[in-house]
Image (cartoon, rainbow, N blue to C red; front, side, top):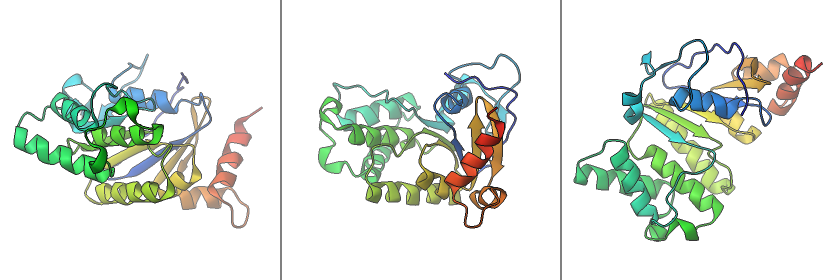
Length: 227
């Protein structure tokens, strides 16, 4: 687990904020802190305008890097279970939300299949359906597009952009520059420190080289702090 050191940042509502860094840089730790799964040794975290507490979990959707699905249950049963966990008690409302989430990840034809019999990419899609089912105000997504084909990845990003346009905040970790290019803002992490923070355009410009890519920008900032 990466250790975060003196990290200070804020994410406005409706922004798609991506966090990038090498393994161990602290990306997953940052996400677990936002979710309240671990506590900071010092400092404070404010989520959705209030100090983080257990009873605001129904306002946040979380997709961990390693899925937390029940292998013996079907896709539909998993999404229904987590919808209830998020506080969706009305059966009709829950049924509509579950149908919508499963349709989004294009798994309608497999909705009664056991998760144990799915490929890794399909399990990733179920995890995303779980994170979206209760229409959260904040989505925390740890490597959400891993294992997805380019067409489905594009459809996910179209949906993410639509959510952002409707005021939903997205905090996304990724190791792919394709994902990074879709973000409104990027945070580059190195050994628990923020080494750069800005829009993709600003970070490319700061790299200095003509026609710099995001990969060039990432290397530019990371290599500056490596002794």
